[in-house]
Image (cartoon, rainbow, N blue to C red; front, side, top):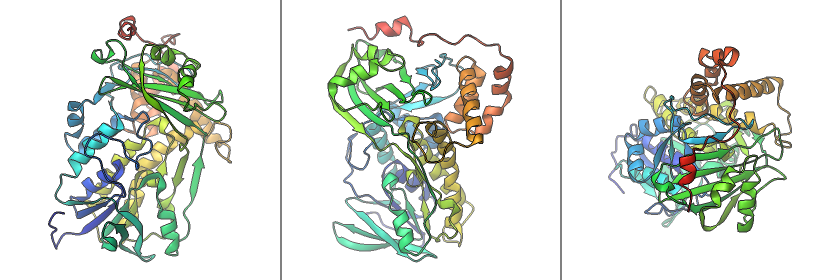
Amino acid sequence: MSDRSTTRPTAVVIGSSAAGLFAAAALTEFADVTLVERDTLPEGPEARRGVPQARHAHLVWSGGVSAFNELLPGVVEDMVASGARLAHIMGDMVSRAPNEVWFRRFSSTHHRNLVCSRELLDKGLRDRVLADERITLLQDTNALDLVGDANRITGVRISGTDGEQILTADLVIDASGRGSRTPKWLESLGLAPVAIREVDAGFAYATRLYRAPGTTAQSNFPLINVQANPAKAPGQGGIILPIEGNRWIVTLSGSRGGEPTDHPDAFLDFALALGDPIIGELLKEAQPIGDVATSHSTANRRRYYEDAARWPDGFTVIGDAIASYNPVYGHGLTVAAQCAIAVRDVLRSTSITAPGTARRLQRAAARPVAAAWDLAVGQDAFYPGATGTPPKLAERFLARFVDRAVETGARNPRALGALLDVMSLEKAPTRLFSPDMLIPMLFGPRKPHLSAPPLGEAERKTTAS
């Protein structure tokens, strides 16, 4: 444990997954930070219980890459040096959109996504953040409840290797993810329940690791992505994510009635039966490593803390603890970093202890959450049984417009740039109504849609045994 200044404010961050690490890094500018983590953190790039989705495919969109580097300058470069990859989207990607349109592989946009295993990514973040002497890590420690009252939170009651104790703090941030206990904690203080919305398309995921076949390890083999189509329930899709160690992470997904299983013999058949069999065809040449991992925790769930009638000073919720998304959209890590930047930006102009600061922080953190939420729900709400409330007229209009935007971006580089600006969470959805999108959408010229995935013959040969 590092020496602490007696004059600096103090903060406690609950959870040391990506959101908690980013929050801790942002807060060191203003306070000494204690990071409370219930697990024992691994030394190397290893899986841990607190990140149940870690085995599945993960992407960090270019908006997240920018946020990573803004919070932790050079951290992405360090990850690349350790085996991660910055993949050009769509130049290094073969992708079929939900409306079954294949994207052309334009390389004229600036968008590059970070691609690696979640274990490598988490290790890179831990190594950088936990080296800061202003951060104290408490492992094997559970946050039991908040200390304070409905007006101000003054700390957290924890249980660890030394028994129960109270950590006092000027600010407590809940970054504990999907399993956040904040709703119960706030109700125990006498605060009214916050509004919650859930959109559950019923997706299940099955993931298997493969040894990359042939010479793909030396060829910068593209990501292969076949997205599910909400108009053809059950929706089914899959992705091949080439990662460090000459491996592929292969994640298959399916909505209600079309879920993949953990049976090893069924994995290849499921991939071959997708709307396009390209993933299955490539897997025929690859060697599986280990068993199939499955997950059913894929519902989109949002808690509208920013709209609460009363909000206690000294407490803020960020990342997946506010909203969790269907992992297929790959926005969780980007939102985690952007939430931390939002917290930092507020605190640069407002004292951490000033009345009303926590509410301002909560509203700021909700902005990147809302952007990712609208993108996820805009697709998933159209699956049967996803929500008890059918999509509104405005949502239907927006969904149709996005389909048109995808069709246009699939064959026009200017439109693709606008589409990726939004999908990567770099810019607001209004970017889709810019001239870069509307002119090619309305007037062309229009290249024909591709009739097959744009995987070159040379790339196919690299997978040959």
